[in-house]
Amino acid sequence: METLTKAEEKIMQIIWDMKSGFVKDVIDKLGEPAPPYNTISSLIRILEKKGFVGHRAYGKTHEYFPLISKLSYRSFTFRNFVANYFDGASGNVLSFMLEEENISPEEIEKAVAEINKNRTDDSAIE
Image (cartoon, rainbow, N blue to C red; front, side):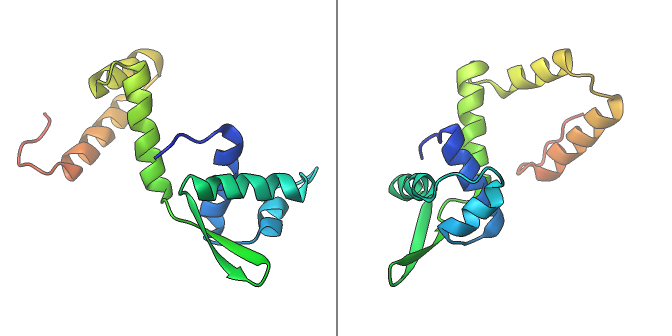
């Protein structure tokens, strides 16, 4: 999987939200001022070449749909983020969040409960 540019990610967010759609649908979701059709069409074709988007052809018209889930891309992006900014250690992310963010004890308890719920082994965080 490749990292998306900001423009590609913006288009991908729209396609994920729509589940499927045409170039004109993506342009409608971008709002005013509307970008040129050819610009959005080119970005979608780039996303297709990168393997993020597929299409169904109806003559010369194409309906686009995501091939990569938003969750898969989020996981990929987060792993890269941790690797690039936190020496690959998720503990460093947690330490940073505790130091930089005003996280309440209730939020910490909720996070620990969620971690425990999602653990695959029998051990729990205490």
